[in-house]
Image 1 (cartoon, rainbow, N blue to C red):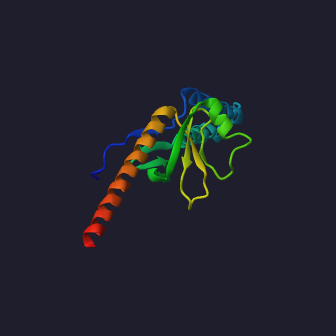
Image 2 (cartoon, helix red, strand yellow; image 1 turned 135 degrees about the vertical axis):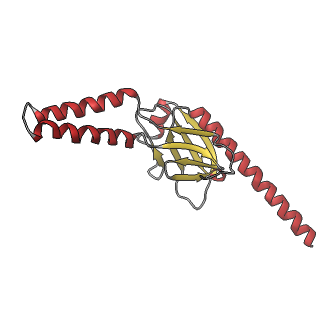
Image 3 (cartoon, rainbow, N blue to C red; image 1 turned 180 degrees about the horizontal axis):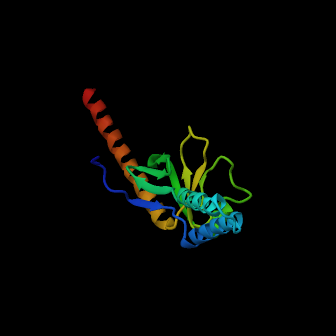
Length: 176
């Protein structure tokens, strides 16, 4: 068992599919299996159901796998990580704001994790001169909470960096 010494996550969310997508997915898989079957006997009677329904389950689970978390001073979206010290600003977006941020005038260098069944999102503006990515757009059901958590993590990282700079300056002054 792994014991973590870090504080608990300030924000955590999994971008699951809504119930109606599960229902629709299984309905389509069932109809396709029934279409292949069409009253045949033998292997063609059961094989489409045995193959298509588990494939549908795997596909729906895969679509809902994305996790969004603010923990240990960084934003984690699936396997991507963004240290909070590089966050310049966080803008909560509603459906219209997300559409505008990802629309015709969107920056092609932006990092986007977008799920169409989730109306809200956040736009994370970056301040990293070494990274050409201008901003991240991440879908979330609770954009205001995610924005607050990320800004709090950024402020904590800035405070820690300022304290380290002050300690280093004091040590340099003591050596002189």
